[in-house]
Each structure stands twice: as structure tokens, then as C-alpha cells.
Length: 169
Image 1 (cartoon, helix red, strand yellow):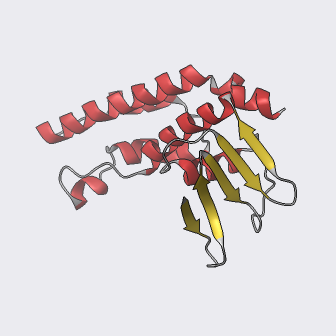
Image 2 (cartoon, rainbow, N blue to C red):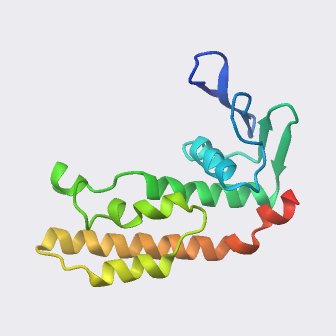
Image 3 (tube, rainbow, N blue to C red):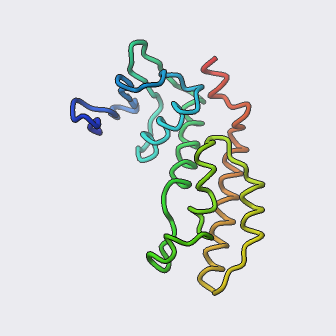
């Protein structure tokens, strides 16, 4: 069994037991509603580091269980969210972390609208940038590959018409 402590140190915020992830939503200001953007972002943040699971239970005054194809979609969204959230710019240490051409800098504003990601805008940004040396060019290549991965993953789950939204309704 896996468990993360909540911010106030009382009890477990997230637990994984026998393929079932339980997220304690008590104390969350929002509703435990997976069709809400804030809830999906929170869920993705909690499950992105977990292994295999087939059910998600959101514990609050009214428990919400998510299963089936919706869990598969959430796993994919969590993968994308983690990829966009992690600072992957480390080829030249701190210099890359602060670089305005790094993947993290390119996708930073898209985290505010996640899971809606404007892939065309991201591609356009990268195509307009100039890269001063070979390391920057390699980083730009990685950025283009990660943007393609984001696009393919979002297309495969159909974010606008996702099974998650259909199953929640």
C-alpha cells in the first residue's frame, strides 16, 4: 500500500491499495467533480507518480468512483501533466532551467488551461525561436518531440469528447 500524507499531517491524502487509488478530497475548496478542470488537475497531480491502478475514488461528503476507460484517460492526462510540469531543462544546469527557449518555458502558460493544450501555438513558438548552439538545438529537437507526444496523447483520448466526460455525465 502506498500513501501520501496530507498537508496538515492528519491521515492519508492519497492511498493506493490493490489497484484502487483513494484521494481524500475533504478540505478541498472545490467539488469532487472530475468534469471540473481544477479537479482533473488535482487528480493528475496525485496519480502521476503512481503505478498501475484501475479505480479512483474521490472521498468527500459524497464519494465519487471513477473506473473503466475514464481511468485510462486520467492516466494519459496525468502523464502529459507531469511532462509539462517537470523542469526537464538540465543539459547546462541552471542556465537551461532559466532559459526562455526551454520546454518548461514554452509550455508554462498551457498549464493554466490544462487539459486544453494549444499544440499549434506551442509548435509556432518553437518554430519562431533561434537556437544559438548545438546543445540548444538538441533541446529544441526534444521540445518538438515532446510537443508531438502531447498532441498524439491528447488525440488518442480525444480531450474534447473524452470517455472521462462521457462516463462522468
